[in-house]
Image (cartoon, rainbow, N blue to C red):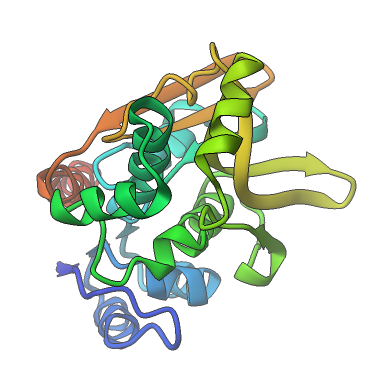
Length: 252
């Protein structure tokens, strides 16, 4: 079994992509936390695993320790998911929540996030919404079984969000969150990531600064939501271990 946790490379997926392909071709199971290979080559990797009779697991690629993929694939296997919504990026949720709750400016909230270890020195991938879009593509492939690419996702980040905008939303009983959405429409699913006004009682609106969450809207299972408080990388590592255990159980 290969456990692959290279830093995500969204340009060509390397070195993770070649490592995963080599392992699957040699009949090895793969557990990965690396988004890049899945965003760029999901159908090919899935076919490679199937052709060699091995498992490919990637729960840690979407919102760390949150079992967003497993919940959709296993627990909603009998349901028709017509809409999913997620706060899939901790950095942006931390920034927007601190701006709304503590009256910080965008720059102040970002500095706090960086000091607390919740944002990279270069947060561009997160604050421009592209990290959430990557995770949405993985969910769309794995849970909705819809062949999406990054080009299919309309993306808008949070760099233009101001304290005044958040105050205006609050005055209308709303909360602003960066929400990744896949909604079935004519011809397939429409995918987007953008700052969204949510009703205060929406499951995602209630999430705190250090939380991520997912909401599945289904036909027979109703509305299912899950959330995680993730303050350290430990839950992501645990998600990889969860996938290892899952593979071992299947092979027992």
